[in-house]
Image 1 (cartoon, rainbow, N blue to C red):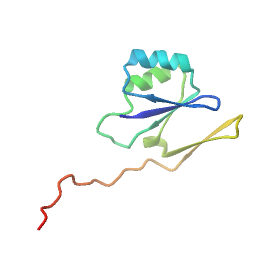
Image 2 (image 1 turned 90 degrees about the vertical axis):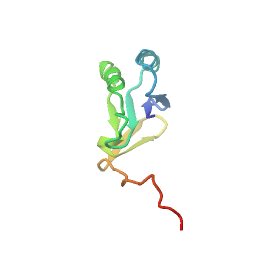
Image 3 (image 1 turned 180 degrees about the horizontal axis):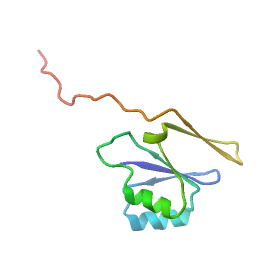
Image 4 (image 1 turned 180 degrees about the vertical axis):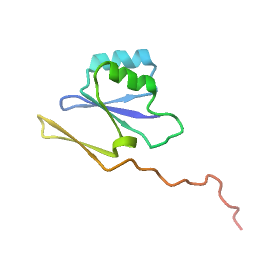
Length: 104
């Protein structure tokens, strides 16, 4: 599951990208976000973010920042204005074995 953080004037609304495209589109239209941020690992095996989700954002002219492409995304507010910064490149966790060696 991936979370999209949809940034309004000074409000952050969380949307689950696993929603169906129709429901997502209605929610996007109702919220009318200015920016979407996808917190997603580089090369994830789930294919997130879903192409349909990115398409719904693109069709509405909503820019999407992705942590797998932009690295860390920082959103700051002074109560009236938002500042969005990206830091670094994507990051990948080292592989972890799910099989543990036998205990002796």
